[in-house]
Length: 171
Image (cartoon, rainbow, N blue to C red; front, side):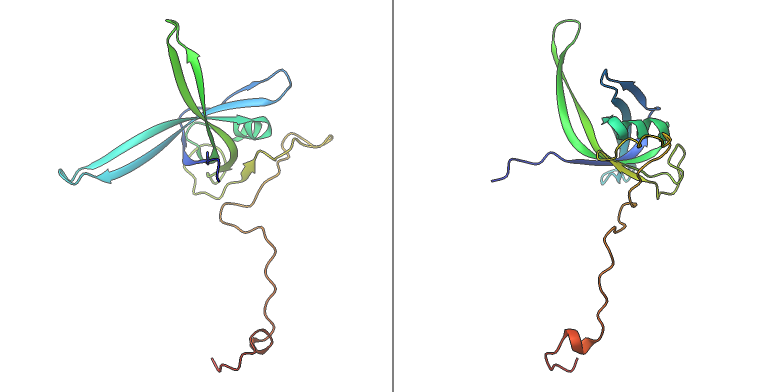
């Protein structure tokens, strides 16, 4: 029996530049706010309606460093991750809750990967991206294939139809 699924995928634009901080162990913790919008036509009035949702996203370690380096206000980004709810108390002692997206992968959707409204095709990064090896610059990134692109080896081409299908059917 399944234990459940906690998976989020959003694509939107940053509302502000990323905020990065470092934990004592040295890992980066980057926070971004991503706006997603949907629009529809009101059936009664015929007017176009639009709703924007704001999402808090937290990126850790190397993926957080990459976000801080390449994302800017207005950047278009695709995020995959999971939801995490935090409980805290306001100054009056009341319990409050906030839900964030903890990113496991990120794809830069801007053509240059920073700011603006470029046409897509950016690089993709996930939590397995490791820091550069000793002697490499901080600019060295382990890029993934763009979304939708296959990273598998091409399938072996069939040599002839007769070798693969010998069932005697003439079509």
